[in-house]
Image 1: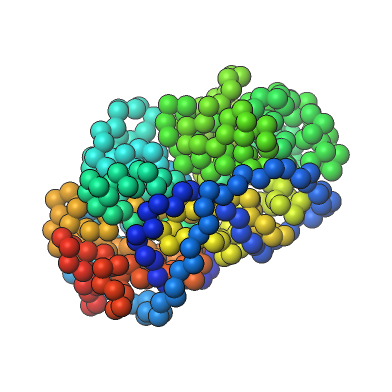
Image 2: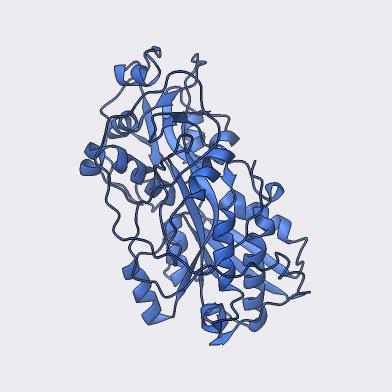
Length: 428
């Protein structure tokens, strides 16, 4: 579980031209026992831009927002990686503000971003068809700089608020195998390219210190080819960093161009996890919570220092603590350096309009309700009892920066607005 409740600093919202970058971090936590293998050097993806340091703000008290008594209906949707967090937060927030009716519609990060913009989503039996337009999007992938410029010219600025750190687990089912499975990035890439077809392959044995795994065909499970998935984006970004072959043949993306070799597919993290659980020899990528919920095996993945690490509270938090996060908060955090960091991690974001007067059916009370919920999520929402297993809280330094979206006595233009006017943050 995750322990500390963070706080935040400043965030200028005008840095809309930064491109997404695969950035790396440091870590601390548990170290699996047994032999440590030194990974072969691989070409790294070059980041497309360098983050701009943020100016620190004063630290504000965590109870700035409280029971304001506002009433509103708020609908968000998108990321299935973030769904367990938002579902728990919504349940907990009822105790704070009974007049605010919150709902979250999981489908995919791509669907969430599209519905937030007002783009109709085709009906798909595998997912919930989200409301259009949404009040906020849940997404594991930020808008690109080009997309943000289009949004700014159309409706105004968009704010990306990182909410938690999630880990993408490599989940599997191997009947009659009781050991801890270990996989290096290059081996994992070959499995998902279809180049390694059986669990007895020498590359898998080498990752496991020479221990042979009984011969058994590998069944690869991926997210649906027809949907845009933030989980796929994070996973393929990792594989593209650790394997030049994967980068050349597939590359990172929300809708990867997987080679075809009889893979199984699932429309969400839960569906992928259920498919893995239903077939001996299956392997796939899901959020850690979904893997644990289906009692699947979770592989230890080799990190930059050569250690094999599982996604835990400590390894996720540690990976994010040294993240170089730009002032617009859009960055990827895969393949962290550090002895004990888990290498397949990511922030997941809530995406909202900076001017909350842009909301569908906008009222001052509705705008206030969203601001109140976001403040709560970045403070009380980070506490251990408010986070499900498989997720880590934001680093304190990042929370302090994000507070600048709500309270900034130096520049009222940098905080949330309602129809051009600074939104006053109420306190009960």
